[in-house]
Image (cartoon, rainbow, N blue to C red; front, side, top):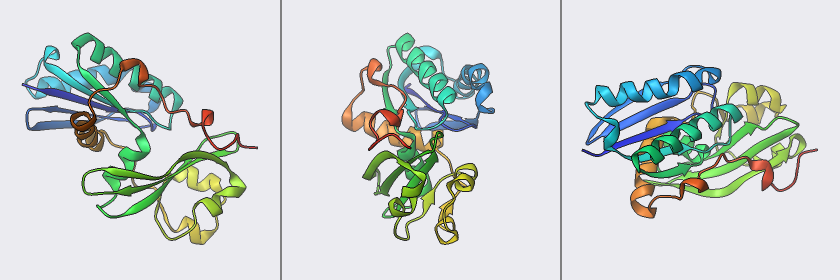
Length: 221
């Protein structure tokens, strides 16, 4: 029976989801510093709960960020190890797209905002369609003083409390922030499997953390 695993560790509290046939299980992980120790045991527990065996693994999906540097490295390394060991097909999915897919209703759009440290912020804009996520504005790195212009309009801003607090945005912009959502493995599982079916697997060496500074508009500062 087909077994699929999704790993999303771009935030401090990651998550894992497993599907075997039509049944699913999902679990939260500990804080980011514990990802390395509890990720594989959590995956194994969910697989066993579904009556699965490691050799049944046929698909691995993993969030590629942006987000926690350590969390992404642990999550992606684990996903690649599982895929190689089982000969499973794999795809990486940007975590902002995972967030938009899980947080938005079809037809709704939103910005994604993350504190990139060193004075920079990661900004992107997405549109949730019936069964996909359209990238309206690709992720870039911008300076603090550029944020108001980049977040123009009335669309919600998917972010987190720490980023919102450090952004210095005007109250009318902060009112649009949704800090109650984060990228989740359940949404990754659904979106990733659909892309795997439609687009096929990625080469394993192409699945890497999405560190945006390399292709942002310009370095912050």
